Length: 244
Image 1 (cartoon, rainbow, N blue to C red):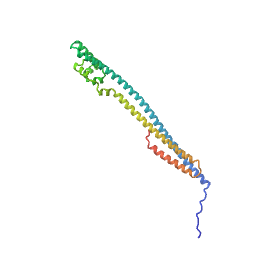
Image 2 (cartoon, rainbow, N blue to C red):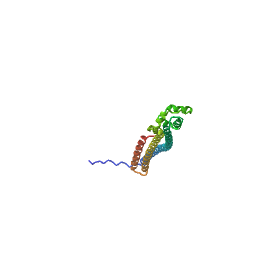
Image 3 (spheres, helix red, strand yellow):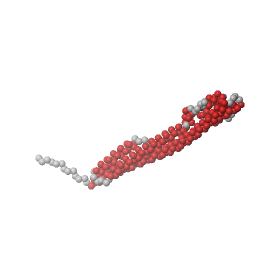
Image 4 (cartoon, one colour):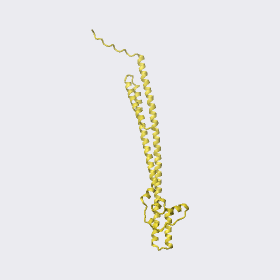
């Protein structure tokens, strides 16, 4: 009994070849359309993040300038307080050398006036001067003479650390806000870069899908599969990113 060999498959007809080509072209068109659409979405998101980044960087620069201005203003107030304090110390030193009488009282009154009228609130409180004298002056603009003992006690004190912290408090607050805004801008810039990278992946998927149109053999499906794989991976990656 002779061994029977399987009959060879009949060659594909022209209609079957045409149907296969049309199926591949349809799948490729869908892949190209989907890739282009998702790439546009990635580009749009990247543009939004870039805009946010520029806005945050600009706001950070503005607040940084305000912080520097506040620091300069604080420096001028500190310099003024120190100058007034030196003048007051000189008056108090003179008062110590004078006997009790009208001239001595006049010198002490001048020292009181410097403390009450010219000192900043932070400096006044730092030298532990009586609050009622400053409150009375702030209320009706009438000077109340600070008692002699409290004047001399204030003359022996120097501005403490809390005084300088209060003077630079607004500057430090604005500097912190500027730093936070800069960090937000950098975060937005990084997010925009990630969407830009996704756009590159979608472009690669379009490249592989389009390359398959050049071939007329089954190898074109390999390029189609590669383009599909890249598209799916890029879509998953984009879905896990932070969106605006």
